[in-house]
Each structure stands twice: as structure tokens, then as C-alpha cells.
Image 1 (cartoon, helix red, strand yellow):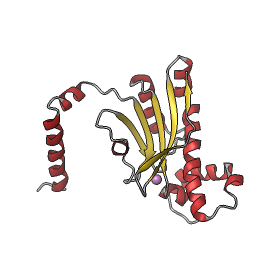
Image 2 (spheres, helix red, strand yellow):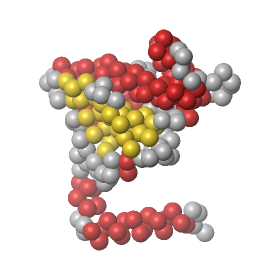
Image 3 (tube, rainbow, N blue to C red):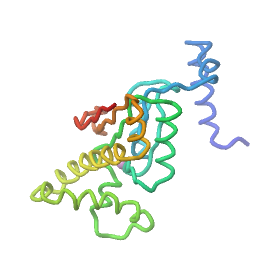
Image 4 (cartoon, helix red, strand yellow):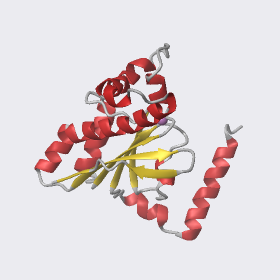
Length: 198
Ligand code: CO
């Protein structure tokens, strides 16, 4: 018996649909990928990279983790950035957070969440770095702002990676963008912290 049969049915329909619109789509794409964008986003199921920006397979290289964090010692994320920049030669790296992020919220709580608290420490740092600005905000405002500040911090972390610095040093055109997605209405907002560089 096939497990999760409905997902395989969905897949057949999806592949058929694309094939009907463009019979060469999968064949062309199987030869190479040439995405212009690297998306670093939250694992949250409500924030699917390609769908939000309405782009088909092949257009976005994606890395997702809890609360879209870029840690300088995370070999997983750094390897994705290296491959995207050095091999795929993406022109844009987008760090996309979202309002109502459960990871950001959990980082602001005192209770024990288990292993994940070690990951969330990186977001606790963001709270500490911005303590003055966050003072006086109510709980909702503080979570919203923390979701934004976390993106801004991670943009800065991407810019500081050796991969991005070396690529720019070698003349690559590479912009790093900070965006935030509103899960209540599906709309993206640019946080205007883009660093474009050569
Ligand atoms: Co999230």
C-alpha cells in the first residue's frame, strides 16, 4: 500500500499541469539550474519561498531554518551561501522573516523549550543588542519589531561572511536584502536594509 497516497496524486496532477503548459519545462530544467536568488527564510509552513514570490522551480535557491538565522559557525547555511554565490552566481540574497514567528517568540520567553533553546540563543542576542529600542513596547509590538530586527541582524551576518566579502572583493555584483512577510495578508515588505555591493 502506498503511503500518503494523496501527496503522490497531487504530485502527478502538478507535473501534468506544468507539462501541459510547457512540454519542455522539466527536460530543460533537468539540464541546469540558473537561479538569480538565494532565499534564506523561516521553516514555518506558512512561508513557502517560491509561492510567495510566485516563481516556478529553478528560480530560487532556498535555505530555511527556524527563524531564518544566519550563524557564522553553521556549516549548513554557510555551504548553501557558498554554493549559491560561487557556483550558481546568484545576484541577490534575500533574508526573509515573518511576523508572528514562533521561533522569535520562543526566544523571548523564559520557559524551557529543550534543545531548540540553544538555537534561539542567537535571537536572544538580537534582543539584547536592541534592548533600548525595544523598551516600552507592548508584547505584540515587541514581537513584531523583534521579527524585523532579527532579519536586519541576519542581513548583517550574511554580509560579514567570508563568502560574500570575497565575492565582492573579486568584483561580483551581489545584493543582500532584508524582507518581512505578513502571514495575515500574504504581503511582503522590504525593510530597506539592502546592501548592494561590488
Ligand atoms: Co518563523
